[in-house]
Image (cartoon, rainbow, N blue to C red):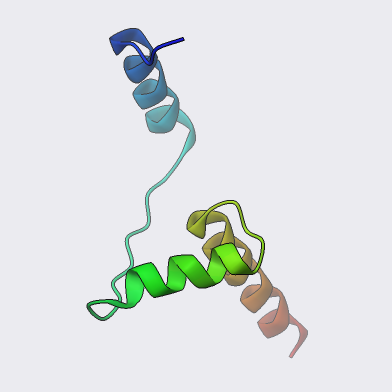
Length: 64
């Protein structure tokens, strides 16, 4: 099944209503390297890796 304009609109609507964006900046050339490293660690996406890393860091800081 092809990705239609209706699918695109539904995806945009879902993202707008259910997700927040956080933008990070990394040195030129590091983005792909970081994405590859996350994939090598078994993550489906770089986003899931970043979210988990943030949550782990917050949990560690709370324990101090």
